Amino acid sequence: MLVDTLDETLIESVVKRRVETPSEAGQRRLIEGEGKPLFLADWLRLVFIHYAVDPERLQPEVPFALDCYGGRAYVSLVAFVMHRLRFRRGGKATVWLTAPIATHPYLNVRTYVCHGGEPGIYFLAEWLPNRLSVPLGGPLFGLPYRLGRLDYAHRHEAGRLAGQATAPGTPGAIRYHASVDREARYGLCERGSLAEFVAERYTAFTAWGSSRRLFRIWHPPWALTPLNLRLDDDSLLAATGAWHDHARFIGAHYTPGARNVWMGRPLGCSRK
Image (tube, rainbow, N blue to C red; front, top):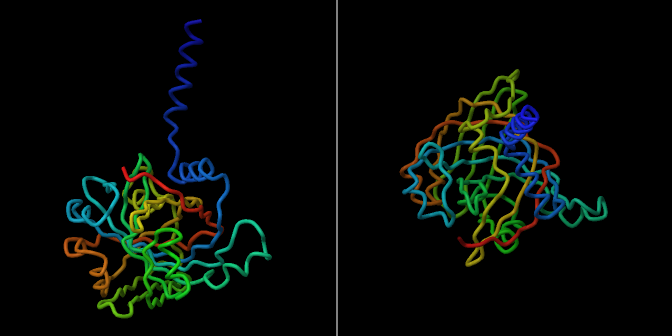
Protein backbone atom coordinates (compact mmCIF):
# COMPACT_ATOMS: atom_id res chain seq x y z
CA MET A 1 0.00 0.00 0.00
CA LEU A 2 2.86 2.33 0.82
CA VAL A 3 4.44 1.66 -2.58
CA ASP A 4 1.15 2.44 -4.36
CA THR A 5 0.87 5.74 -2.49
CA LEU A 6 4.41 6.72 -3.39
CA ASP A 7 3.84 5.88 -7.03
CA GLU A 8 0.68 8.00 -7.17
CA THR A 9 2.48 10.90 -5.51
CA LEU A 10 5.34 10.64 -7.98
CA ILE A 11 2.98 10.57 -10.94
CA GLU A 12 1.10 13.61 -9.62
CA SER A 13 4.32 15.57 -9.16
CA VAL A 14 5.44 14.78 -12.70
CA VAL A 15 2.10 15.95 -14.09
CA LYS A 16 2.33 19.19 -12.13
CA ARG A 17 5.82 19.85 -13.49
CA ARG A 18 4.46 19.65 -17.05
CA VAL A 19 3.98 23.39 -17.49
CA GLU A 20 2.00 24.68 -20.45
CA THR A 21 3.89 26.37 -23.24
CA PRO A 22 2.83 29.98 -23.88
CA SER A 23 1.05 28.83 -27.05
CA GLU A 24 -0.88 26.15 -25.19
CA ALA A 25 -1.83 28.60 -22.45
CA GLY A 26 -2.94 31.15 -25.05
CA GLN A 27 -5.15 28.64 -26.82
CA ARG A 28 -6.68 27.50 -23.53
CA ARG A 29 -7.45 31.06 -22.42
CA LEU A 30 -9.09 31.93 -25.73
CA ILE A 31 -11.23 28.79 -25.70
CA GLU A 32 -12.19 29.22 -22.04
CA GLY A 33 -12.98 32.90 -22.58
CA GLU A 34 -14.98 32.73 -25.80
CA GLY A 35 -15.06 29.19 -27.15
CA LYS A 36 -14.09 30.01 -30.72
CA PRO A 37 -12.19 32.89 -32.36
CA LEU A 38 -14.07 35.71 -34.05
CA PHE A 39 -11.57 36.18 -36.89
CA LEU A 40 -8.91 34.25 -38.76
CA ALA A 41 -5.97 35.81 -40.61
CA ASP A 42 -2.56 34.98 -42.02
CA TRP A 43 0.39 36.85 -40.48
CA LEU A 44 3.24 36.66 -42.92
CA ARG A 45 6.99 37.47 -43.08
CA LEU A 46 7.49 38.94 -39.63
CA VAL A 47 10.58 40.87 -38.57
CA PHE A 48 10.93 41.37 -34.79
CA ILE A 49 13.29 44.16 -33.66
CA HIS A 50 13.96 44.31 -29.91
CA TYR A 51 15.03 47.04 -27.47
CA ALA A 52 15.86 46.90 -23.77
CA VAL A 53 14.97 49.81 -21.48
CA ASP A 54 14.91 50.52 -17.77
CA PRO A 55 11.39 49.86 -16.43
CA GLU A 56 11.21 53.23 -14.67
CA ARG A 57 11.71 54.98 -18.02
CA LEU A 58 8.90 53.05 -19.69
CA GLN A 59 6.28 52.44 -17.00
CA PRO A 60 4.89 56.04 -16.97
CA GLU A 61 3.85 55.56 -20.61
CA VAL A 62 2.08 52.21 -20.08
CA PRO A 63 -1.26 51.86 -18.22
CA PHE A 64 -0.60 48.23 -17.24
CA ALA A 65 2.16 46.77 -15.07
CA LEU A 66 5.27 46.01 -17.08
CA ASP A 67 6.40 42.41 -17.35
CA CYS A 68 10.19 42.36 -17.03
CA TYR A 69 12.88 39.80 -17.81
CA GLY A 70 16.04 39.94 -15.74
CA GLY A 71 15.00 43.27 -14.31
CA ARG A 72 14.71 44.92 -17.72
CA ALA A 73 11.69 46.01 -19.74
CA TYR A 74 11.55 45.41 -23.47
CA VAL A 75 9.96 47.03 -26.51
CA SER A 76 9.69 45.32 -29.89
CA LEU A 77 8.91 46.51 -33.38
CA VAL A 78 7.03 43.90 -35.40
CA ALA A 79 6.89 44.47 -39.15
CA PHE A 80 4.65 42.07 -41.07
CA VAL A 81 1.78 41.68 -43.52
CA MET A 82 -1.68 40.65 -42.44
CA HIS A 83 -3.37 38.66 -45.19
CA ARG A 84 -6.96 37.47 -45.59
CA LEU A 85 -8.56 38.77 -42.41
CA ARG A 86 -11.98 37.12 -42.35
CA PHE A 87 -14.71 36.00 -39.99
CA ARG A 88 -14.29 32.45 -38.78
CA ARG A 89 -17.90 31.69 -39.61
CA GLY A 90 -19.75 32.43 -42.81
CA GLY A 91 -17.18 31.38 -45.41
CA LYS A 92 -17.36 33.16 -48.76
CA ALA A 93 -20.67 34.73 -47.82
CA THR A 94 -18.97 37.03 -45.28
CA VAL A 95 -15.58 37.57 -46.94
CA TRP A 96 -16.85 40.76 -48.55
CA LEU A 97 -17.43 42.31 -45.11
CA THR A 98 -13.72 42.39 -44.27
CA ALA A 99 -12.37 42.66 -47.84
CA PRO A 100 -11.53 46.42 -47.63
CA ILE A 101 -9.32 45.85 -44.55
CA ALA A 102 -8.28 42.23 -45.10
CA THR A 103 -4.72 42.59 -46.41
CA HIS A 104 -2.10 45.23 -45.66
CA PRO A 105 1.23 45.67 -43.82
CA TYR A 106 1.57 46.61 -40.16
CA LEU A 107 4.29 48.13 -38.02
CA ASN A 108 3.55 47.42 -34.35
CA VAL A 109 5.48 48.93 -31.47
CA ARG A 110 4.72 46.83 -28.42
CA THR A 111 5.92 46.29 -24.90
CA TYR A 112 5.33 43.46 -22.44
CA VAL A 113 2.90 43.59 -19.55
CA CYS A 114 1.21 41.32 -17.05
CA HIS A 115 -2.33 42.00 -15.84
CA GLY A 116 -4.40 39.82 -13.55
CA GLY A 117 -1.64 37.19 -13.65
CA GLU A 118 -1.88 36.96 -17.45
CA PRO A 119 1.18 37.88 -19.55
CA GLY A 120 0.55 39.92 -22.67
CA ILE A 121 1.50 42.88 -24.79
CA TYR A 122 0.56 46.54 -24.88
CA PHE A 123 0.83 48.54 -28.08
CA LEU A 124 2.57 51.89 -27.83
CA ALA A 125 1.70 52.55 -31.49
CA GLU A 126 0.64 50.74 -34.65
CA TRP A 127 1.20 52.13 -38.12
CA LEU A 128 -0.68 50.86 -41.16
CA PRO A 129 -1.44 52.28 -44.60
CA ASN A 130 -5.14 51.38 -44.77
CA ARG A 131 -7.22 54.54 -44.32
CA LEU A 132 -10.36 52.53 -43.63
CA SER A 133 -8.74 50.58 -40.78
CA VAL A 134 -7.18 53.50 -38.93
CA PRO A 135 -10.37 55.01 -37.44
CA LEU A 136 -11.69 51.56 -36.45
CA GLY A 137 -8.79 50.43 -34.26
CA GLY A 138 -9.52 52.55 -31.19
CA PRO A 139 -13.30 52.27 -30.87
CA LEU A 140 -13.46 48.55 -31.70
CA PHE A 141 -10.37 47.10 -30.01
CA GLY A 142 -8.66 50.00 -28.24
CA LEU A 143 -5.75 49.82 -30.68
CA PRO A 144 -3.62 52.97 -31.28
CA TYR A 145 -3.71 52.87 -35.09
CA ARG A 146 -1.89 55.59 -37.01
CA LEU A 147 -1.64 56.16 -40.72
CA GLY A 148 1.76 55.24 -42.15
CA ARG A 149 3.60 54.51 -45.35
CA LEU A 150 5.11 51.04 -45.10
CA ASP A 151 7.35 49.37 -47.65
CA TYR A 152 8.57 45.85 -46.85
CA ALA A 153 10.77 43.56 -48.92
CA HIS A 154 10.99 40.51 -46.65
CA ARG A 155 12.36 38.11 -49.24
CA HIS A 156 13.90 35.34 -47.21
CA GLU A 157 13.92 33.13 -50.31
CA ALA A 158 16.47 35.52 -51.79
CA GLY A 159 18.34 35.93 -48.49
CA ARG A 160 17.45 39.61 -48.08
CA LEU A 161 15.13 41.51 -45.77
CA ALA A 162 14.51 45.26 -45.82
CA GLY A 163 11.82 47.64 -44.71
CA GLN A 164 11.01 51.26 -44.18
CA ALA A 165 8.19 53.23 -42.60
CA THR A 166 7.24 56.89 -42.43
CA ALA A 167 4.12 58.65 -41.18
CA PRO A 168 2.46 61.71 -42.73
CA GLY A 169 2.97 64.76 -40.54
CA THR A 170 5.32 62.93 -38.15
CA PRO A 171 9.08 63.43 -38.32
CA GLY A 172 11.41 60.46 -38.48
CA ALA A 173 11.46 57.06 -40.12
CA ILE A 174 12.15 53.38 -39.55
CA ARG A 175 14.65 51.80 -41.94
CA TYR A 176 16.37 48.46 -41.59
CA HIS A 177 18.00 45.76 -43.65
CA ALA A 178 19.34 42.30 -42.95
CA SER A 179 20.67 39.25 -44.67
CA VAL A 180 19.25 35.83 -43.89
CA ASP A 181 20.65 32.49 -44.90
CA ARG A 182 18.38 31.01 -47.56
CA GLU A 183 18.98 27.65 -45.88
CA ALA A 184 18.38 29.05 -42.39
CA ARG A 185 16.93 26.67 -39.85
CA TYR A 186 13.86 27.99 -38.09
CA GLY A 187 13.37 26.73 -34.58
CA LEU A 188 11.13 27.13 -31.55
CA CYS A 189 12.25 29.35 -28.71
CA GLU A 190 14.05 27.74 -25.81
CA ARG A 191 11.80 27.51 -22.77
CA GLY A 192 12.41 30.36 -20.36
CA SER A 193 14.61 32.29 -22.81
CA LEU A 194 14.45 36.00 -23.59
CA ALA A 195 13.42 35.07 -27.14
CA GLU A 196 10.39 33.19 -25.79
CA PHE A 197 9.60 36.10 -23.44
CA VAL A 198 9.36 38.64 -26.27
CA ALA A 199 7.97 36.46 -29.07
CA GLU A 200 5.48 34.09 -27.47
CA ARG A 201 2.63 36.37 -26.39
CA TYR A 202 -1.04 35.59 -26.92
CA THR A 203 -2.99 38.37 -25.16
CA ALA A 204 -3.13 42.08 -26.02
CA PHE A 205 -4.19 44.57 -23.36
CA THR A 206 -5.48 47.87 -24.70
CA ALA A 207 -6.52 51.28 -23.41
CA TRP A 208 -8.85 53.68 -25.18
CA GLY A 209 -9.97 56.67 -23.13
CA SER A 210 -11.19 55.29 -19.82
CA SER A 211 -11.82 51.84 -21.28
CA ARG A 212 -9.49 48.92 -20.55
CA ARG A 213 -9.86 45.84 -22.73
CA LEU A 214 -8.08 42.73 -23.88
CA PHE A 215 -8.25 40.40 -26.82
CA ARG A 216 -6.58 37.06 -27.28
CA ILE A 217 -4.98 35.37 -30.25
CA TRP A 218 -3.58 31.94 -30.92
CA HIS A 219 -1.20 30.30 -33.39
CA PRO A 220 1.35 27.51 -33.13
CA PRO A 221 4.66 28.63 -31.55
CA TRP A 222 6.72 30.83 -33.84
CA ALA A 223 9.52 29.16 -35.77
CA LEU A 224 12.24 31.84 -35.61
CA THR A 225 15.74 32.49 -36.81
CA PRO A 226 17.98 35.22 -35.34
CA LEU A 227 18.87 38.11 -37.63
CA ASN A 228 22.02 40.13 -38.05
CA LEU A 229 19.95 43.24 -38.63
CA ARG A 230 21.15 46.77 -39.20
CA LEU A 231 18.96 49.65 -38.10
CA ASP A 232 19.65 52.51 -40.48
CA ASP A 233 17.07 54.79 -38.84
CA ASP A 234 14.66 54.40 -35.96
CA SER A 235 13.85 58.07 -35.34
CA LEU A 236 10.10 57.51 -35.90
CA LEU A 237 10.03 55.79 -32.50
CA ALA A 238 10.38 59.21 -30.84
CA ALA A 239 6.66 59.62 -31.63
CA THR A 240 5.84 56.72 -29.28
CA GLY A 241 7.31 58.22 -26.11
CA ALA A 242 10.42 59.35 -24.29
CA TRP A 243 11.41 55.73 -23.56
CA HIS A 244 13.22 55.67 -26.91
CA ASP A 245 15.86 58.13 -25.66
CA HIS A 246 16.93 55.57 -23.05
CA ALA A 247 16.53 52.31 -25.00
CA ARG A 248 19.17 50.01 -26.43
CA PHE A 249 18.74 47.87 -29.56
CA ILE A 250 19.55 44.27 -28.59
CA GLY A 251 18.72 42.08 -31.58
CA ALA A 252 16.17 40.80 -34.07
CA HIS A 253 14.35 37.68 -35.25
CA TYR A 254 12.51 36.61 -38.38
CA THR A 255 9.79 34.08 -39.11
CA PRO A 256 7.98 33.29 -42.37
CA GLY A 257 4.78 33.54 -40.33
CA ALA A 258 1.63 31.58 -39.58
CA ARG A 259 -1.59 30.80 -41.42
CA ASN A 260 -5.05 30.88 -39.88
CA VAL A 261 -4.12 32.84 -36.76
CA TRP A 262 -7.03 32.88 -34.31
CA MET A 263 -8.17 36.35 -33.25
CA GLY A 264 -10.70 36.77 -30.45
CA ARG A 265 -13.18 39.55 -29.76
CA PRO A 266 -12.42 42.46 -27.42
CA LEU A 267 -13.33 41.80 -23.79
CA GLY A 268 -13.45 44.17 -20.86
CA CYS A 269 -10.81 43.88 -18.16
CA SER A 270 -10.33 45.44 -14.76
CA ARG A 271 -8.20 48.52 -14.22
CA LYS A 272 -6.23 46.83 -11.39
